[in-house]
Image (tube, rainbow, N blue to C red):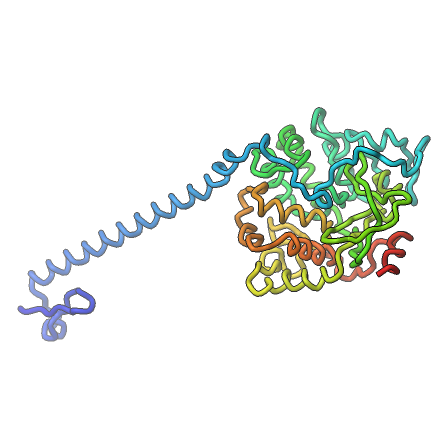
Amino acid sequence: MKTLKNGNRGDWMWPFDARHSGQYTCDTKERARRRNTRRADSVARRCAGACLRIGIYALLLALLPIVRIGAQSAQEWKLPDIPWAFPVRDKVQPVIDVRSGLIHVPDSARSYTQDEIDDLANPPDWFPGEHVPMPKIVQHGSGGAVLGCASCHLGSGLGHPESANLAGVSAAYIMRQLADFKNGARFGEAMPDIAKGLSDDDARQASGWFAGLQPKVWQAVVETDHVPKTFVNQHLMRMPLPGGGDEPIGNRIIELPEDPARAESRDPHSGFVAYVPAGSLAKGKELVTTGGSGKTIACAICHGPSLGGLGEIPMIAGHSPMYIFRQLYYFKDGSRNGSMSALMKGVVAKLSQDDMLAIASYVASLPPHGEESQSAPPSLSSGASQMRGAQ
């Protein structure tokens, strides 16, 4: 019986009379069996090859951070030379106020001496009724380089511009960052040494506690052409220079406490004012919401419509603009190489420092997730009011 070959598909077609009658020759059946066997073998080989390639790619991706970490050790990491974003203590420390005896902050029944406030292993808890009890690791640390978490991140989790705002950030994200600091995938000033001394249980307790705190508006973002002259104190906090007058802001973010004395007391009720160059908010909004005609990627794609985070992708709305700028810079210069950092590489690849400044300014001006109905920023001090009047 004669068979026909399909020149397009390269397979065999049954003659009409055989199909119609339902009778096939033994020879034809054998060819069909062999053809099906070859097809099955071919599919199996292709599937096996695809699985092997996927496995190899996954292994390479998993090894990338290890390779990069090996190429850039913690000893090689250097603080970037951008003083406004990466503060360095001034050699000359002006006296802002003389502090002696017991110190109080508004609305708190507690009191501490300045030495007690500055004890980083036992930070003050001015408002214990505003949160569930602190885990030991948060309030007292665990000895050595492992300080009390609240010494930098405060009893509210909101932190200072030189440290991260952790209030309401997912526990899974915080745990991942601690692991990245610990294994060398992420660099920074103090956190690598702290993370290396953390037990897994302490890391879980601290992450869960900060995740349970309520995010709040913590800084007002003010566009201006001039800012007070400043200095960086012993705690790496930027302060207004007494009697220093003002100066052009240039291409900087200058983030100052609304009340320097309360900031030095680690008062979690006294926020900050972030001064940014005029036009930063409009430029930042364009980049954040549209990607700036391909210059970057719209932030909401990963961080959610209100930039309040999605799963392990962190909340960024309402965080310190100086801190946000630093993280964008770290992603670009390779100081952040954690397992999820690849998501940010394309975001920052084409951004200039001015672009990152604008993005940080706009994101910081947004209400944090869950606070959309709260429009009032922290009460501005007279210094902030004066700066607004100078615009």
